[in-house]
Image (cartoon, rainbow, N blue to C red; front, side):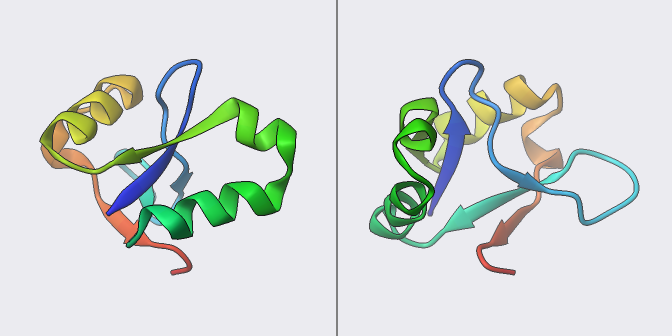
Length: 80
């Protein structure tokens, strides 16, 4: 699984799906799918964002950027 994060602060692309808690992190099942989404948005978007693998380290970095604990992050597939 792969997420797209803002290069400047590592905050991932999210979707507001619930009233409380952190937003849900949107993921793509393949790196190619995530990169294709970025490419479709144009060069400025590609320059500002990066694709990261959702593993223990990647999840921890996203949680820190979002100001929450790792276990609070909910992952939702794109498109949901």
